[in-house]
Image (tube, rainbow, N blue to C red; front, side, top):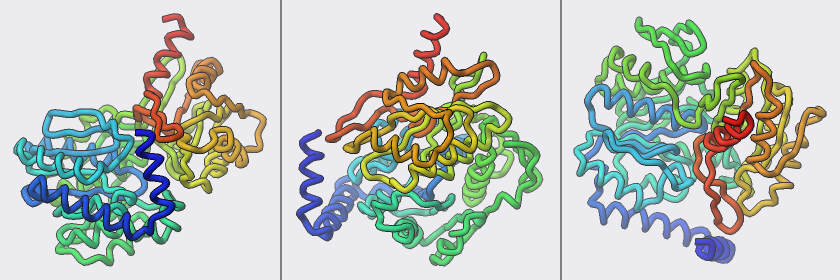
Length: 409
């Protein structure tokens, strides 16, 4: 695998980009052809945006199953076909063309009516959305991400827009996002918008929508927006609010998303937040507690601009900051940490390259009532290192192991 990745990187440097463009397009067609264009036999819903895609996909899946509509789903966390599920071990939110078409074919064979999955900008760049008949396209929100990969925010937005250009039936748009007008310009048979302003906020994740009160178990105010997105998608498919309410209130946690791994004597929370916007939302939602933050940033030349911003936000909200390794890929982990530290001018910051040791240090520093916040990886199963290498990893598992050692459980 390492040799294949090295060869790929070398070819990217020497071959014209249009060759790779045709390569990806051809694979998309071939995958659909081999598996018999399975999306034609499904009602396919594509969810795109910067934040909230995974949670929204999980919510839609639960609502549809509650409504007895057999559904297949793909998120960065897992694959599901009806009640069968398995972990997403690909370190890839949107699978490659053959894997995706095979999955849709399996969904058809299992008797699924719907398929809902995350559609990423990088997936669109590689034509993974091609030869899939989308019934609905949902836009959650947009903020800078993968900027180096796309060559600017404008190109990133355009990549997301290609899903809406392809889907001609139902477009569902978050009106609260300042980029919503761009996505509303694409033609569709139906255009539906949603806004958190249309809900009456009764608590952190308690709200009233169209006369129905929803009381979510999930933490984080931002999950109200995710829930509204799922509710509107469900309504577009004729599912009533009472069924949606029943489904949403059953969800206890989304793995690696605002997940409290330890609750006493102090709390330890693991979250996937890896952009400045998502990180600030997580910290804000924990207001009132003393935060001890374990923080890193992805390598591989990805969005280097955000590293000092992550440091700035951590300094704003955290009593103690521990900078550590995340997914360095081929970058020097020390350099990544140094770039995060550029945004921090407090003395309450430590650098511990070994992520396990960093988590251990955070637990040792925590007192009763504190919250240890570990961000960047969520429920991911791997740490990605140089030359395509992977190390088995799960922040949640490591937290439990170190907690048990520390308290001699």
